[in-house]
Length: 118
Image 1 (cartoon, one colour):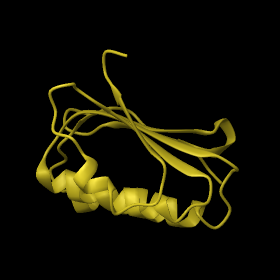
Image 2 (tube, one colour; image 1 turned 90 degrees about the horizontal axis):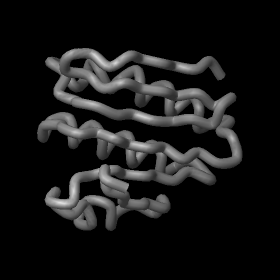
Image 3 (tube, rainbow, N blue to C red; image 1 turned 180 degrees about the horizontal axis):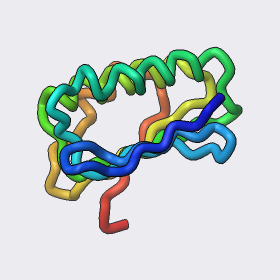
Image 4 (cartoon, one colour; image 1 turned 90 degrees about the vertical axis):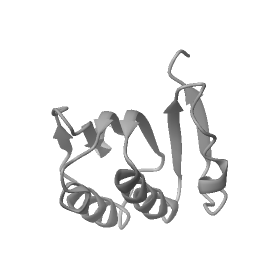
């Protein structure tokens, strides 16, 4: 499957979806003008990838800032990853951020929380 690599923009995060290198990562600021337009290709890529994933898919999120609309789209990404065997999520956050446990309880996917200063 072809890799997708996006550079960080003013309001959009960098994105690496590279099965050959087993690197799946999103980071930076994520407040796109239209979250639906930004996330739809990502969700379509994940759906196609889910048909033949690599053995281990560790998706790392290093989002320093995002808005509520974006968080809803990120939850859609979580749900899409939840359907992939061998997938896990690593979520980086600042120590004073709210706990995401109420959001991730609905998922079966392994979910690890790390802090930016680690």
